[in-house]
Length: 231
Image (tube, rainbow, N blue to C red; front, side, top):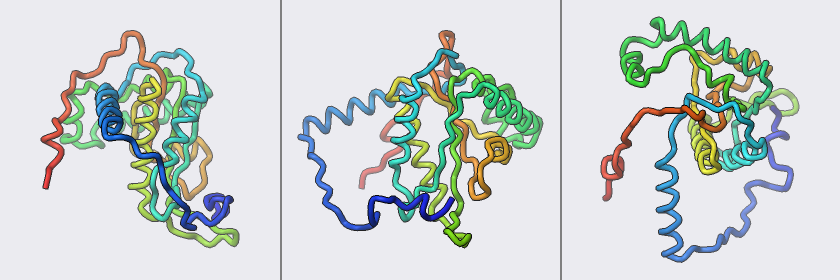
């Protein structure tokens, strides 16, 4: 990736321009916030996907939402690879399951395995081939300018993490289900998808509709009083 590829072409990205979004009334703001809270509380991580097709543009819009995330120095250090090809999904599943088998056989460590047992997860990852789409998110650790000089990106983990959060939100609010899958190690993803050396896989996100027989753990989230402190 070169500097020209990440620098916007519409002018100096740091030139001050007016920003005056319409201000909601207090009633509109409260109603909107309450509705978003209710809708997002319905979000669940799904491992049982329908193979029914999903409009591709819905997923593209969600990725576009993710790419509006804030990033360190506005460097936007992410690449989203959208995959619907069945053969590619199968290759990713086979490679991921091989890594997962090693992990579940002891590489994860007993403490982490104990935390996973109540969820009933294992090395079989049918969601990687059942879901109509996979989004593989890569973080760009650095970029190369036109003469090949390497330049560091800043706050990459934080920036890409925020973008993935926005992606999951956009997908859910668009009526789709998703799973954040992070096989470890993930080097195989860059090799399979022929990504450049400056990109490191961050997450694999299957996207689709929940299967008709989908079930999820009956989890209870922490209350707002448990996660927020007023000062």
